Image (tube, rainbow over all chains, first blue to last red; front, side):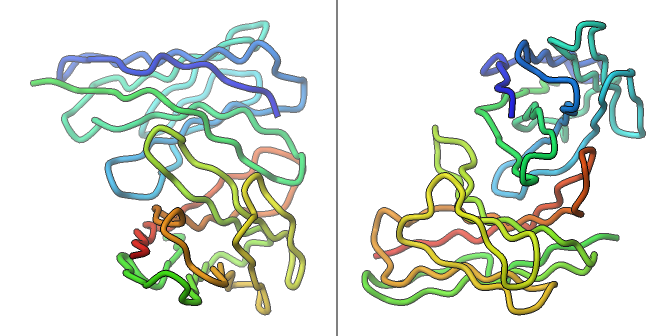
Length: 110
Length: 114
């Protein structure tokens, strides 16, 4: 599975959009981009995933560049409860193993 | 709502004890996983199972074994617990498929080995 690169931390003001970047330059054609988040001492929570097209659900939007080498997770109106570590994962069908990197610690501030 | 349940939230054991961590999922998923999470090291895959009685080693299987006798249950076994196995253990499950499956996690078990 392709490796991902994320900034270690980011700050965001409450109520503003949080834009979390992820680089995955070695992604292959059948690999999806997933985003999970982990609030302190809890299990990771699924947010969104996509293959080529941009995706939106009730939690977030996922923007994937045309060459698929990078993506951005957008939380449109960040709240204090969105403070968490956000993981970007690239995953295909290889034995169904998901690999987590170090993630981005998002700090939402009042 | 989908659910992955881990039997204990916190566990304290002695060095040399045999430790069982249990995980149950109610989604009829084929795949189940055990990860451990340590500060600065992220989530590391210990073992996974893609079917009853089937298992594959992950990245750090040493000192661990697993058991999957029923589809909904996946157990992690520490044959002889050591202090370096103090960690947060996370169980997860997913459907089988060719890509695009979601991974669902339990709440985790914080294991302390003294």
